Length: 227
Image 1: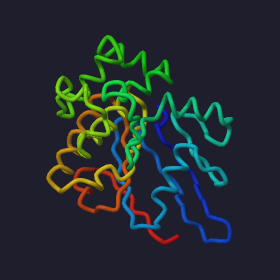
Image 2: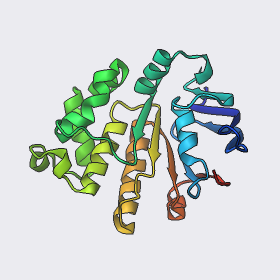
Image 3: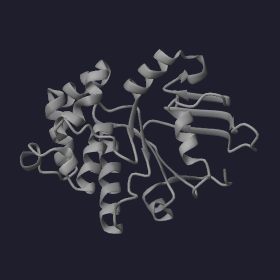
Image 4: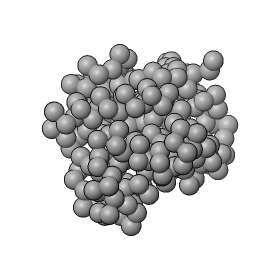
């Protein structure tokens, strides 16, 4: 079976700068969890942008679910991202005019594959969204009528996590998802995210500058250098 993420001889440098990313080989298979650690300027965000197909100009190969990014058109890359990737942004990027369930269901509006997977698990995207939110310890009945902008940072974070998880994407990418949390809430959130990713059969790739998170992952990659 092909890996969910396959990187070979990946090298990237900003114009006039030494290589920021230099990864000879990296593979992630279904259900694996990888923690990428690095200080500010080490290339964490650059690597994520390369993996999700938002940053061209690299040498080497990045494959997602068997598809090499350099062979895809922009439209094909967008489709691959919608179908195969759940992305948990550092700033969450929730839509303020949608409630928490509607925010979680968004990927199912753009991907028929993820909609079908959500329906297979919970009969409808809405029911799967509620299952995920409750699994992440949110009281949907109490919070559904509130604008997402009025939710606490921790609540917004869990809504964003449920949105990344819905439809069982092959690869979940989390960018500094715990930066606004205290250690107790951080550890609880990571444990819940890992458990639900495993339940959904999704591969998880997380980047952070926080070395305390390494204890939650059986695979780690440390990036070095400064941009």
